Length: 393
Image (cartoon, rainbow, N blue to C red; front, top):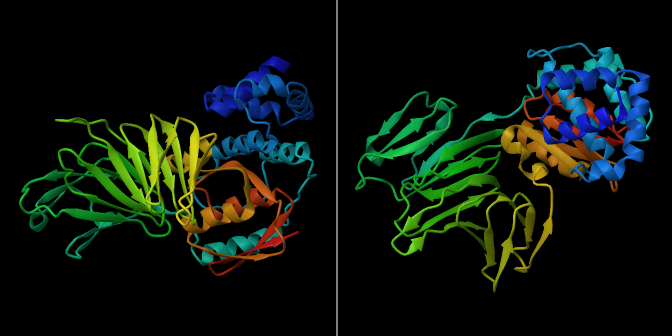
């Protein structure tokens, strides 16, 4: 393969535009020594050329994506095999060699013992799962709804789409409850459509409270946890009707846009994908304006806000079924996994300065996720029931 060809394939890899033939071409090329040498040379000598086309100066990111594609063809049923195919092992070796970390050889007995512990505790990926709570305390388990359902006492009809998401049809405005809340448990996610046509994706351990029907001149919701919004523009008698999101003493004002809000930690992070948003705090009068590919950080305790330029993919990939990490701390990685796989995490050792970069499917078997993270050659895992101990090597 020529040098320019490899560079072009890497760029398409990052953008997610490789077709099946190109994936096979790149995968096969990286499975031999010539491919490894050329990949290393392209990355180091052509770094400016690659960077000018939007690729990060991060070897782990590119190779993490390569590993992800290699696993697309894995069997759909759980497996007990631990040996890599030659091609999969070669791709993993490239990740470790170019990253300056050396090679890893798996212990078959240790891996099978860990896999058995994971299967025994039924540590599986999260699912589409949520509950709807009305103002009178009534709770409806949305995962139990298999078809359109009429709630006469609530004055509405819950519509179920072919992909399992919900929307509403008001059948009696006099009986419609003013507000309702949808919440997801740990290991759950859900998508819903609001009365104005806007869509909301709820990540695990999150909730959103909203009116069944928005007012003619006002749209406002409250949320906790993490959610991705795709807001529809609406006009009223007095002009455009803004969409407001309230979270931890912060108000996010939207006209029509796509953005992500993450409030799992003490701070609130708002990531803008399209359009524009204005953020304000109850403790301050100034507004912070965001443009696409920017993220705001808000401290509810002090009311302070700041913004920075980012790659939105790493903060919104969960919506399309991916874990995406860019030099993320091990504790950040494990926090995300804990919410999705419903596990408890303990730590042994000092993990300062240890990071992980890569993309992993949220539908991946938990044992496979741990294997990929262990490829940093800096940590290992111990499984005891649903408790996962992270051990520094």
